[in-house]
Image (tube, rainbow, N blue to C red):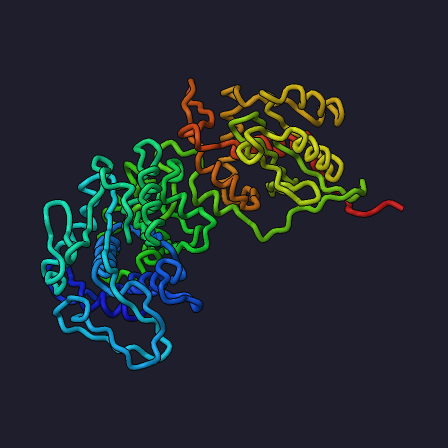
Length: 531
């Protein structure tokens, strides 16, 4: 609704600095997000609240000092006293008058024909959520300043720990140490720095409880955060990876092929992610980043490069893995004709009822992919949670049999724990020189194998590529390096729920490919049918 955007720029003020109290003109990125967030559905009907809009909630992932806090404060201001509830479609000539809604500022807005009209929430109940009081101040401090120095002081009163809106409305602060108001019905919520909400600090459940309170009132919400650490499986990551189509996601990115370690390319990254922030001095950003890179490069890339990268101990850097993705490349097609079968190797890691089970394949030219099987062409990845808590062993058997029949499988490296009987059966059926037991619990061998694929991911001329499988990507980013004697490591989970099984499968597939090439098993053959 244009009336909402106009109201914000007429009632929100600059919260601090030399221009304190002057009108708050939204930055280009802020205006873009606000316009999308307040877009009304073409089929909206009078009386609808959250369902009248294209998006039920929003997520804003922006780098440090890009203006997330003041923007969130301006949105809260509008949700508390501005026209944020759909009020029907204008015929033309109708006006929104602040005085009719208790605000004596005198502001008016005339609607164009066919334009969605708005009205304020009758009883705004708003919550601002963060992990601590210092964190929630990112939004609450500019909000209080906007009220104090702007026209909304006539309808809002800042009290100790909350803001009173009109006679019965209020804006509350909620932190991890003050959750007594959680579960209350609310009309709007800001969840700040959701990249820090994880299972350890129990903020994921807090955020979900808050959203349940919104659902009962047909309310809406907005997340604001820096780029998250993928090893923590935060609320921010859950939102970003969710398949929900009514969530507005704003997450500007520079090309993944640009290296954050390279100063010239880093400048390009900063220009891309700070494109809508004319107030940012990129030289000042570069100075801070250069120092931070010495001690915590992951933090620097997340906070200022707006990239999803793991912190200390991550096995493979996010950008390196993404640079190797070639999803546009067609996966090798299986064939029932012997001389047309594509030579590949397989990696297999199995579990029973907790971890995942999966198979990855790799071709002789270093293209790694997740095969499919069965009439429905399902990927060879099995999450026990999707199979009544138990890995479907018959499905895995069927997948292995199909891959063996339709590809020229030279080697299959299998981690045997929990699957000793099945691996023995495969070795007997398909040959014990093709199906090899490869124990990942051996630190010397596992370290060498993990380093081999990691090196080939990093080296520009290695030839290694992959299909961009999202599950494998997530598991690779989860994988941490657990120290072992003699400067070695093995792959480990950052926590039990953060799975790494497909990362292990990738290691096994690549190790099998390299060994097959060394043994002369992967050689080019003419792809033709015999007479």
